Image (tube, rainbow, N blue to C red; front, side, top):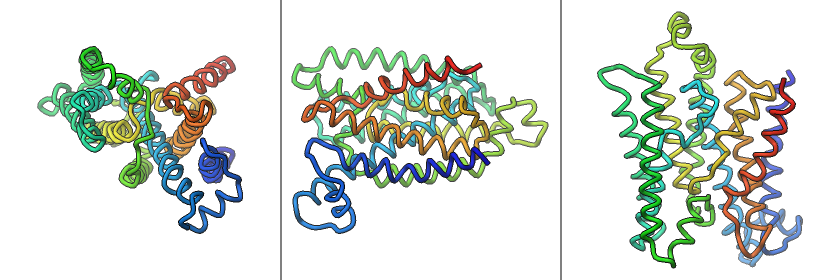
Length: 321
């Protein structure tokens, strides 16, 4: 009952986080102005600020955070590794290499996002091809391939940064640390988040059993390899979408599942929706702080997520018996 109440509280908290995130920005608006603008769209400057600037960015932050938290939760089940996060399989490295290569050649933001998506898909295909052969699925090989590819992509990213002209370097580094300022097409990411969340919830009981180990899962009638493949592709697609939407935002996919588990949430039928809500809300608040703390200068949101997340995580770990 207590955990169900916590889920209900998070559902009610999401609209409040949305309103607060829309309220704050480089231009001071009152709560009444924001409320009126949200209820009735008009052609005045307040409505333009709210609907054209702040609402898309808040939705992008929520979608990106939710996707990262969902991917982290699924990968920690798949790999049975508490250190697993959305970037451990090299998907973000492939996306980052594609995006930075497009920036190096001076391409527009649409082409940058397309290059990031292509890089992520290439990384997914490479990891899958190297770890799944002739029907044999080896999770240790999967993890090792992901770590090796991530290291290789990291070296190539460093090479691109070295070759980049000084005028493009700041934008590249900003993207690598998380940048939601260019995220205007949020609908596909939000639809994908909803679809993956519902699909994961339908298999919540199976995820609980899979966490007991392959042998016990097979004994209890779980089709282990198809389930693991579904988790791998779902987590990889969620990671790719999050990276294309907001760059490489760190720490969200690692801290949110651990935070909820430290609070006693272990049933994936509750853990998954809670992780999506907490991840989305956490990134929305972090992005609001990033764009208002030093306004009009904006900070990379990945810095803020680490500064907020590390103390909270250490505090919870210190109190955990």
